[in-house]
Amino acid sequence: MRRRTNLTGLMFAAPFIIGFLLFTLYPTGASLFYSFTDFNLFKPLKWVGLDNYKWILEEREVLKSIKNTMYMVILATPISLFSGLMMALMLNMKLRGQSIFRTLFYIPSIVPVIASSLVWMWVLNPQSGLINSVLKSLGINGPNWLLDSAWTKPSLIIMLAWGSGGIMIIFLAALQGVSKSLYEAADIDGAGSLRKFFHVTIPSISPIILFQLIMSLITYFQFFAQAFMLASLTASGPDQTMAGPEKSLLFYAILLYREAFVDFKMGHASAMAWVLFLLTALVTWLVFKSSKKWVTYGGE
Image (cartoon, rainbow, N blue to C red):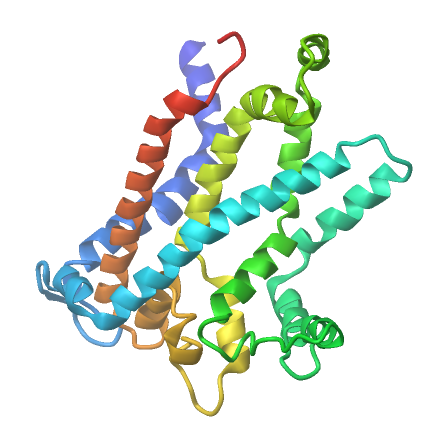
């Protein structure tokens, strides 16, 4: 009877197990193997040892892509979290039409990347775009957002802040879970709004902040879609670099994609993928280590 129960359980688990082996474990192991080879899909692979990892250290475009990626990790992460939290705080207020406002704020996060990129190309157009038109009416000459290397990444950060509805909705759920008795105790002690925010709200939702921080870091280390679309849409002629003005949109994931699916250098791409995995794992571990000092859980 017990054996039959085990077989039944395995049958139900089989789809996941087979899928995990075929689509997760095997590709992961294969990419690790290919990272030590010269493999381009069209000729037999050749073992090259650590040459692909040496190429990562020596290639200038890799260094440029790392700088661009770290720019997004360091700046876009806190800005996205801050904008999401501020929207959540506003939408947590008791207002008429609250559900309508919540829907409107959340919609940008579910707009497809291609559609949102096209919209933002118009919004950020230096001649006729919405932002520069407003700035011009105020007597300010707006920048060449997507055509100036100094403004391409800030343009992306603005787009990401606009689409931070997913972050907002999780923060909103966390805010609604904060015990009202804590705010009542703070009111009795004479605490103002700022003190309640920093001493009640932030500690109460700190586990959610930790979750959002880690997910955002992982997302921006792999930042690809919006930059890829904008670099492709603003490219002129037969440009296949997908790098934007002065390679300001050449992020690590875009270079990895180019090495794999444009130049068909699977060895380089696999090595880059493993370096990205190890770097992301290291940063995530450091965040977890630091969380002991600033994250509080119920009952602590």
